[in-house]
Length: 305
Image 1 (cartoon, rainbow, N blue to C red):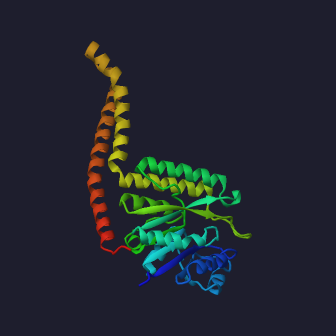
Image 2: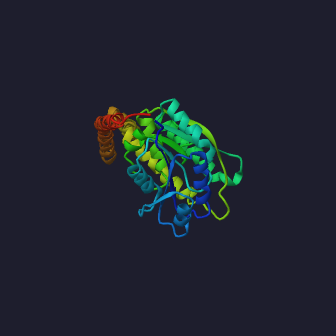
Image 3: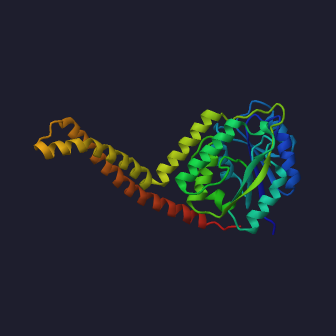
């Protein structure tokens, strides 16, 4: 029995590209169901997507994260292929990505973008992607080469066990961290990335969305690595306390007096807060471990490919 394949395309004001996108995936995956989820477009995106043969649905809450959450919740399939509706991703690579997911019993295959056209991948986006990817690798120990790629293939058990919390373009980062934290079997393949068709514009802001993605990485680091996060904070406070206390200790050893009492009070407070940070990290680590076990059990409750 062939697996049910769903192509899911989040869209916002993509009238210039959505027809080409749907046609490309229809040619590459003729047996797949193609869904376009519109996110309050003010142009003819819905009309053109329907004319191209896609199943059109709407998500009124603005933001890509909200759209992906709705897609994952509403669509029933065995394999999900997610891409953007801007005709930049290589639809011809879809069958090979899906076949790799099946052959290797994976839960996610990421299409890492390789651009041969400068206009396809702006320098600011390229630099920001490398920087954020490096930060993620340092914080979580391993990563993908393109954590911001929107071209991905998922198994059903990934989709139905993923508690999406993101609202905007940081959704790809959350997806990557979720896979890394649960140590899912994943892979990455290089796919071509082209320029947008004429009349189509990017909705991604290099600085605004870059900051949101960075903030998401740091938030996930605090949530998923509390011992390291709060331990590092406690260590910094402890070092400051030691630096401030050293002259006081020398003076006390020489004279038996503590002349700078405000500094002594500050050192005591910093030492107490440092200890609290350390123990908070230990307590939260126990909580995170329990949450991770529950997510793992929810993931294992669903059959793989």
